[in-house]
Amino acid sequence: MNDKKTTPGAPSRATPGSHQRGASKLARIPIAVAPAARPLRKPAWIRAKAPVGPEINRIRRILRERRLSSVCEEAACPNLGECFRHGTATFMIMGDLCTRRCPFCDVAHGRPKPLDEAEPRHLAEAVRIMGLKYVVITSVDRDDLRDGGGAHFAACIRELRRLNPQIRVEILVPDFRGRQETALASLGREPPDVFNHNLETVPRLYARVRPGGDYETSLRLLARYKDMRPGTATKSGLMLGLGETLDEVEQVMRDLRRYDCDMLTLGQYLQPGAAHLPVERYVPPREFEALRLLGERMGFSNVASAPLVRSSYHADLQASSLLP
Image (tube, rainbow, N blue to C red; front, top):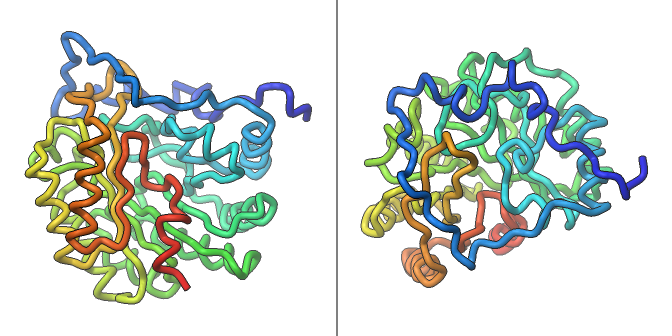
């Protein structure tokens, strides 16, 4: 393939019948999304480079050839261009169809397919070809699976290390609603280097932002994993600009530190489309910086806090101080 040609984006975007996004995805959530009467104008500090270039096409080609998905493409991440140009991606396992309908997220909803038993091997091969030393794996929610996909995460970690012995692995997991015990049993046998689960927002906004999720359930997942594997670094993240107050953000940070969460990411929520939750406020960089300093005083080993920060943005650099 000629790298000068544009490689297509995520294949799921070409199949709206099976992959619901936007209004069709959000029509059945318990709290209707009210569009903003006058959408906020994006400020000057929100800037991302267009995802074009030969290295971006190379990464996309590797993903397509091995039937792999990336959250970079599926969730329309603003950092896709930067990360792909640096030869890295956040892999999204267990398919490209999520069983949840979160109104902040652009990953498609639909009926998931059976797990691909070859996916761990394809993932490990792609990482070897890309020459990665640090990899982030996330997934769609799979509420249809008995263990929420915990065993599949473990299989991916095992195969990654078999084909890439020096690899460092960070996993960004769902909440494993009602299945935490079985999921954690699998992940305890194949522990990652970093265990990440995003709280996403403050407790008051959960019903609107994360229908199907629960703040205490998510916090308990991080606490249980830390109790089970105290030597493994844990991590979480929040989106800002959804109507939370700074006092509420600080309380979430204190909750995380109460359970020895090591790392934190804070970034600006950006509305993926007209049907998604509107941006209530663009948080200025100075407030992100103040929260970074506060987090460091609280005892987080690393706080990545800036408008375009996302869960896996420069994840290798964030974890470097914790890994031998």
